[in-house]
Image 1: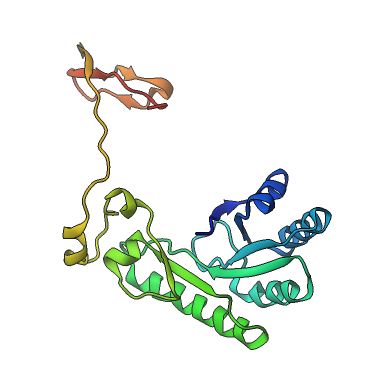
Image 2: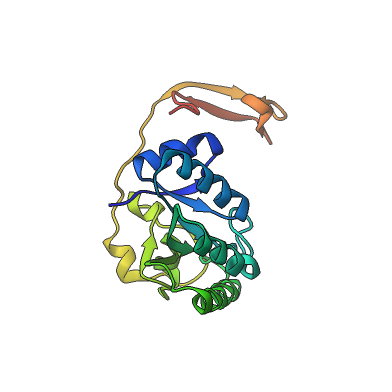
Length: 211
C-alpha cells in the first residue's frame, strides 16, 4: 500500500520521499515547483496529495486557490496528483461548522473537476467523523485515534454500534514511586505547571515525557 505523508515534507526530505515512493502532502505552488525540480534531477516521478484548508487552519491551500494549483500540476511532467483532501477541525462538537467545512470542500472539488478529472483518492473523514458524523466524502477515510482503540471525546451523539466494537489496542502502566504532603501554594514540576490549592498529598509517578 502507498504511504501518505500527512505532514509537510521539508525540502531536505523530498529526495528520500521520491526515492521511497512516499506520497507527499502539498499545500502551495512553491512546494510543487520545488518537488518538480528535485524529481527532474533524480529522473523520477513524485506522487502528491493536495490538501485544502477548509477550516482547520494548519496545512492546506485555500479552497479558492485549489484550481490554480491543479492547473499547475497539469502542466508539469514529474508530479502525479494521487489525491485531494481536507481535515475537519471540530466534528466531535460542532455540527454546523463541520457542515460549512463540507460545503467548502465540495465546492472546491466541483471547481477542480471542471479543469481536470479528480484524482483517484478523495478523503476527509477522520476518527471523529466516523464516530459522530458518518457522512463520508470521497472514497477513503483516515482513522487516527480509532486505530489505537481510542474514541475522540465529543458532545455530539456517537455512533453507539461502532463505539461498542472498538477495543483499546494498548495500555500504559507505571508505578507510584513516592508520596508526600505539600502545603497550599507549593508549585510542582517543570514549568511549575501545578500549584497546590490546599494542603494535599501528592504522588510522584515513575514515568516522564519520554515514556
